[in-house]
Length: 210
Image 1 (cartoon, one colour):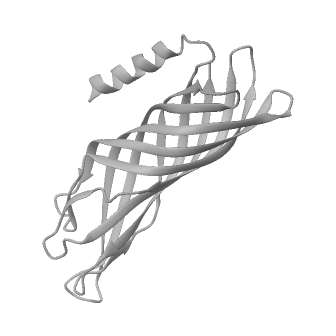
Image 2 (cartoon, one colour; image 1 turned 90 degrees about the horizontal axis):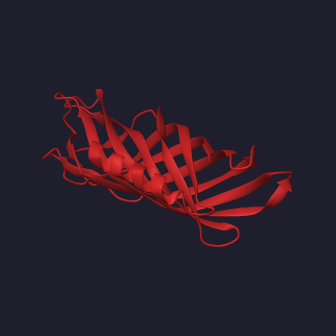
């Protein structure tokens, strides 16, 4: 997996040599939460508290028009899964937590406005994230989820502002929402094989492009 990440970084660095292609670094404090549904009369589960997580990595904006860019990259992302469920004693509420690390590959279209002030533009981002699991933390005492799948995907909606601060340098700040589209659970406990979980993230994206 480390070799795979290295190859992506080298690829992004290579395409930066083309005219108007921008390579950048991004850091994103994020709130990780999840939506949970069960389809069982004997087993009920719901989301536990959301958690603060962080994303960071490299991005690339490739021009496809005067104000349109295809945006991609390689982002290291950690997602939190928190589940509340009833124990054998109906009055007892149990909590289980999981952390899954992903390599996130954005596949989005970024639309820029004209300058709203000198050297400053607004932009909007729409697309999907392809996410490859690289590690997962599952406590041996956890009873609800036994294994997560290797892939996840999410719808991406975002908006922000970018300001040019030099001949070839710009800084940006944006708010983005990642809404999980598929159930990443590969294997759950035998008492309920129909746990549906989808991960969401709300992020403040901070970065610089060169």
